[in-house]
Image 1 (cartoon, helix red, strand yellow):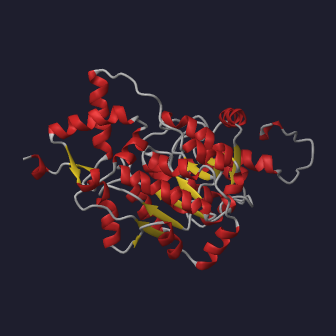
Image 2 (image 1 turned 60 degrees about the vertical axis):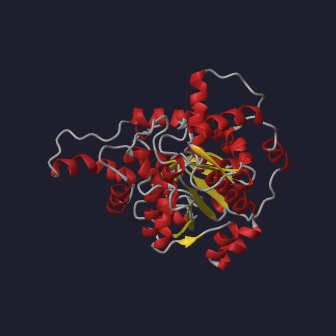
Image 3 (image 1 turned 45 degrees about the vertical axis):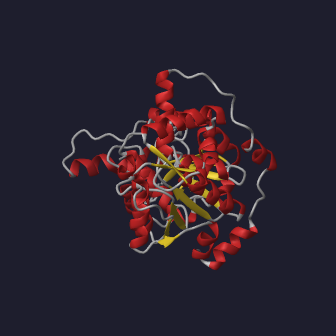
Length: 395
């Protein structure tokens, strides 16, 4: 039911939750109204409906002609899309709205949530990092996410490739929050659609954007501020010198959150951002114990109280053998070579980790490694470990 559907023949009634949500949606979806402006208008006019009534005149006073607020039909369509996706709306004023996020001056007035809202009640830690993560980076992300989840924390990340995906997968048994740059029902990258569905079963997909909205480049920094604002701490696993993960870290520092970073090899560009963070004062992280040690004692105790054991079935599924080998064309072989090189860096990595990361049988990986060795693009280290060849190694 829209606000316009109420009859003026009845005396005015206090707004219901549904009415408030509707007017909040209309105000937030109106042109030139972002989170900061929304909060200012709400404080100035007392309610979203009062602000909606005043907006056209406010726009005229600012020299904007023909300003119109968000039409009711657009809000009706968004609500219908949310019902179809089984999404629930969290308003800034709701008791279930994340408390730490509420303290931000640009806190999202509204959040669409698909999944189990109870994961927002536990202490949270964000794990972020490179999309083209190395095998060591992925292994670290999985280890941290699993251990922190078992310690009672909700793991937060952005559902991107690489570190984000690894963190979400490892935290599935204990519940994880995926913060999306587009609508809560629009999964990006599309390859993570299945993962998002599994997240919504034990955790939560969260977004401030309209339902059905495809993310644009400008939307990811907005998403990152939520990843930084939800938790008490942000852990950066791998990050280049200029990356979205460092934007998240900078936001976290601005919000007064703990910033922790995993060190990496100085020759690996994917670790340059983390190494710089540590140089500038971020806490160096080697494992989950270091993360827990860096957090306030009262929060660690609260997380331990809510700790949930990992699901044995999901653990068993994670140990299933990779799919059977398949024949590859020259183009597919080249693509596999690029995948392997993308997983390797200057730090030695075991073949076992490569097999797990690439989901390949040994008989498929072995000839590809031989080819790369012959080309001089990878180097075998003592103990059978592999690393990407440095320029001087190729001579």
